[in-house]
Image (cartoon, rainbow, N blue to C red; front, side, top):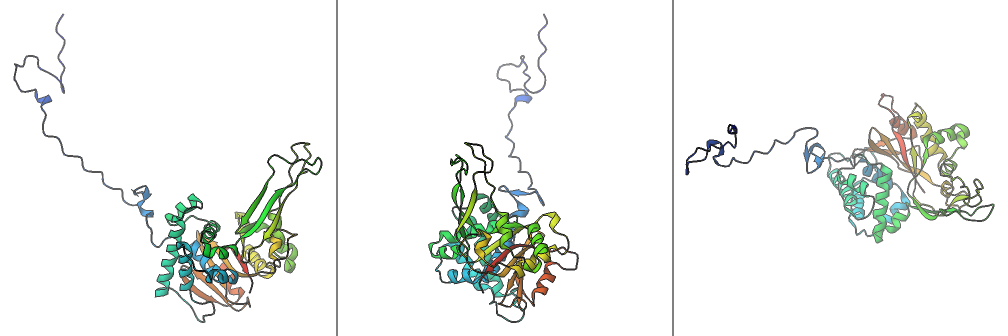
Length: 382
């Protein structure tokens, strides 16, 4: 048979080459090519450095509005301030909070107490950012929240940040008493069956810590409409957390195992949350809820948790943390007379307002930009 056709191209060998001949050109080894240059870095939106989008890395100023709103609201809470100001903080987070509170102008300052473009403003901004970093770096807490705080905290719920702050204050032995002023302690218990007396295998009996008990805005509006000037908050928050009785696993009696929550300690600085949905935001709803928060108020703080608890006393509205367009801001009451002095804290500036009507005008402006939603209500004793 005829010899096979020799291969062509790379790797082809000429069998007729005499010994000692140089290798064919296709096999000659030239100098190694230099390393290929690295691909150019992506620019603009989506560019990534070390797993973090470049346009989101170390953004300044960071999204610290949740911490700013909490700091300005807690400044006006006398029970919290009494415990916190007397403590000698050791950990980074309580120290940063103290620096932020010290940088704010006093509540009784007259005129327009602007912080913008001043030394105090720079100190305040740095203290708030130090607080964010300290909460992100501390051990314990929710890892997802700490990760979000580490990259700016832009998508965090202010109630989640409050929880991290209270836990940080609790971890420092010197500020633990200040943390307790913000914490309500209770217990959830599932009773044995009322028919056969046996307990379910999954019966709960556990301690519960609450920093910001919440209720739907819809229920608050309904209470305002139904009871008008006689409406107040405690029944709404109590019913919002009522527990349904469980069926018995042994005798199968329906709703025979009652579930109850008892209160052992009520927060001195009481913080209540409001959950909003799209159907709650028609014009006038925000102002109706705000009026209920102020006028109705909290006649007995313990009744927000347990209608059989020992009286904890009346609480007055001292601050509101508001939400609009992914941004938190706060309104702070300056004195006992709610119709004579409020402050609006927004983006590091303090704006002096008059009475309650001025606050409502800011909350639901007529410029079509949409209403600020009351999100956390801060109550304390004046």
